Amino acid sequence: MIEILHAQGVKINLATATASPPPWLARLHPESLPVTAAGVKLWPGSRQQYCPHSTAYRQRAAALVERLAERYRDHPALVMWHINNEYACHVAECFCDESAAAFRAWLQQRYGSVEALNEAWGTAFWSQRYADWDDINPPRSAPTFINPTQQLDWRRFSSDSLLECFAIERTILKRVTPDVPITTNFMGFFKPLDYWAWAASEDVVAHDCYPDPRDPAAIVGAAMSYDLMRSLRGGQPWILMEQVTSQVQWRPRNPLKRPGQMRLLSYQAVSRGADGVMFFQWRGSLAGAEKFHGAMLPHGGTDTRVWREVVELGGELARLAVLRDTRVPAEVAILFDWHSWWALELECRPSSDITMLRQLQDYYDVLFRRNIAVDFVPPGGDLSGYRAVLVPNLYLADEELAASLERFVSSGGTLVMSPLSGIADARDHIYPGSYPAPFRKLLGLKIAEFDPYPLDHTNHISTADGARFETYLWSDLIELEGALAIAGCESDFYAGRPAITRHAFGAGQSYYLGTCLGPDGMAWLLDRALSEAGILPPLAAPEGVEIGRRTDGVQHYTFALNHNDYAVEVGLPAPARDLLSEQIHTETLALGAFGAAILVGADGE
Ligand code: GLA
Image 1 (tube, rainbow, N blue to C red):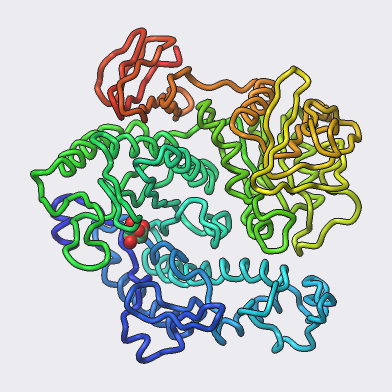
Image 2: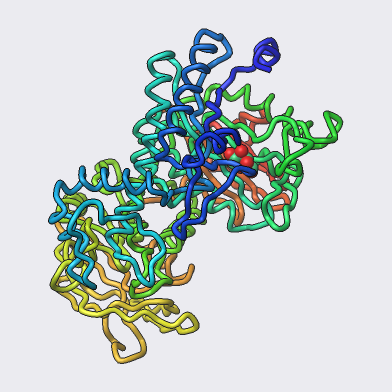
């Protein structure tokens, strides 16, 4: 296979084949099979049936990788290694005895003594105090709510464990083929793995993305995941390693991408920083669980619409070398933290409706509809290049993080923060005093109580400039400590109390949103904050047209992507050349249904 591809000039990103152990491993080493929290063993017959802590699995995987690397080390077609595949997509954690021993070792590293662990986990509560390391187990099925810090540490440990598996392979590959870059395929906002930690040990970020082509919200989710992929290594171009040409087979119903939509969605990734566009799978398989999954070469062969669209896209991409290594400029950052995500969504919270992705999407939707570029930044990341920082949720926070946000705002930045931020420290211990303790100074307020709503309940807020919006899920009972109310709650016993605040802090300002708003309310708030920060979209566009931009520092490339299934016209501020059609457009750009253009000069420069 490798020789056939090489002969045709195809370069290879070779996967290490450790993601689906053969059934004989389970026969020889039944202890290598993963076990669920309830003690159920997962057997061969599908894929990914390995315990990440299994010595047998790790040894055999390492041996396989060593052989593969030795065999292909000098092959001219080998351009990249793809380690394993979609880590944790089916099995993110294992609760077996070998895993329990590994968890204890991880905890010993973290805490040093059982006493320190008891303190961090708050085990005095419910008589959970541990006398010995050997008494500590994974959060296996238990009568009721399991210790929250034990669960949080388990999540950290499980992400670290798979990263250790990745590192075992990486070390071998870097020794045998030091010049071949390394990646593994991520899955966007994937809760089990802290991709900030993972991306640091890769050379290139790669991503798999399968938006439902008939779901209008899916393009927003895809865009958000692309922005995360670009951000994971500080703006470095990434690879869309997997998408599908036509349809997947794993949803209950699997609609086709319409003519042109596969090309359009590929350019959506390119516009958000991808320097590579690839597909799963090459040839449609005839047997197995994925035989109805789309492919570049479908069951119908080369005389098919899908094949023709693939060939056309390949031809176009080959002419876009000018975009390689260009960057996506962004003036807005969203702070995003896996540890807060894990902790926020544990059981026994004030409301199970306050979830990380929901909070995030409320913000992202507005930015997407306004075509405003955004980067994601981890807590402690460099904020100096941004004008606005959005914090949909940071449940876990510390003084250091608060200080970095204070520096950002006091030196002229604009910040917007949402509920349940700054509640607990890294051990998930609540800060005493009023919420949100580390951010009170920055926000100029305190919150003594919060009121989660029943799902069918709404309240209203009225803004100082006369607008009125419905609120959902949550109200903070805010007391001002320097901030000004820019919207107040309309009903309930806290009617008249501030619902949204603005605090002038140094040369900048911080907004706090003490409730959840619908799209119109979020747009009102973010329009106000972003215009105060001086942030404008790159180009005005009709509904359903996505505008993106890449730049090499001198030349800008403006992407116009029509997600509508009808033609539209985009007004141009200056004549521009479309890299895809090679046409010059003067006053307007006409885009057909699912049409795409990459304009040079549209910004008038
Ligand atoms: C994932 C996997 C592939 C394949 C596709 C199907 O991305 O990595 O092996 O199963 O899903 O959509």
